[in-house]
Length: 309
Ligand code: 3HC
Image 1 (cartoon, rainbow, N blue to C red):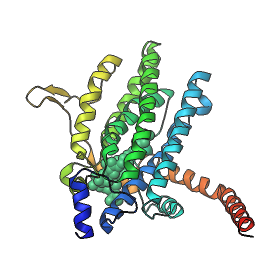
Image 2 (spheres, helix red, strand yellow):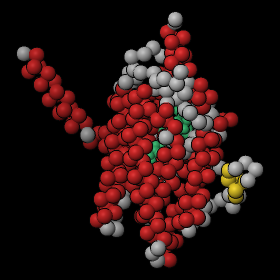
Image 3 (cartoon, rainbow, N blue to C red):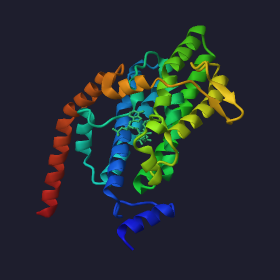
Image 4 (spheres, rainbow, N blue to C red):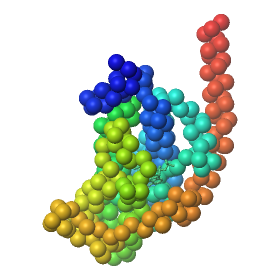
């Protein structure tokens, strides 16, 4: 049996491709691209919420937010390790991010204007991430699927802490309720964009589905997220900013309005509200951390030389 036939048979039997298995170059390249961008998203995603750690309204909220932001860092490191099993180099991937040659999720290019944003990010952004990432636990590439299992457990905490924060604010003052509605209005449509362009305009989805990297299409997961979130908004007492949102009994799903894909394209092209700031922060962190990496590498080399002597 040819290597290609073995690869295809593994996929057909819903088994996992492992790092030492033969795989088509294009399969490897697709996974490096997707996993690297996922990792970049986790690392850049620390900035919007990290912005509020020093200004959290209580020690409890500060502790929860600290734990969440630290989780995101861990997710990024976990995913860079998964990319390395494919032969990718972490430093190169970081350079590609900083130079704009690789993407991170559009959602993190929006500002966090009040503490209600921290709750709405947990509720909507991490909620969308869970919708997108749970199927990835069954992705055909072993290290990615296994990374997702652990990450999804932590995302569930992220989503619950956000929703609980919003429930608390909605039982608070009129001003706090207005803050929650304002944050929901700002984050709803960008959260729907997290799932990617419409299937008809997605250059990667069909092949990623054939390779069982993706288990559902962009539109399928977006619809699942809308169906899941509408009742949560009702329980919270906020209105989702879409006048066309309504249950369609014939489809068994919620119909929703047209997403502004021109905004999506603008943000992907670097013209979002915070793109420049996010990359500048990441570039500064990379530069400021150079001495730590150099010292660690020198120490490791010294240890290796000592063992070899
Ligand atoms: N933001 C930025 N780029 C996006 C995007 C988004 N929301 N949606 C799509 N794109 C890019 C794709 O990367 C691709 O560009 P490329 O060829 O330069 O890589 C192009 O738009 C076409 O999109 P496709 O849908 O054809 O591409 P994919 O098949 O890769 O699907 C995806 C896009 C659904 C984001 C998929 O890559 C994916 O599921 N990735 C894994 C999950 C992930 O990365 N989530 C990002 C958020 S991480 C997060 O939420 C952290 C949590 O803690 C909050």
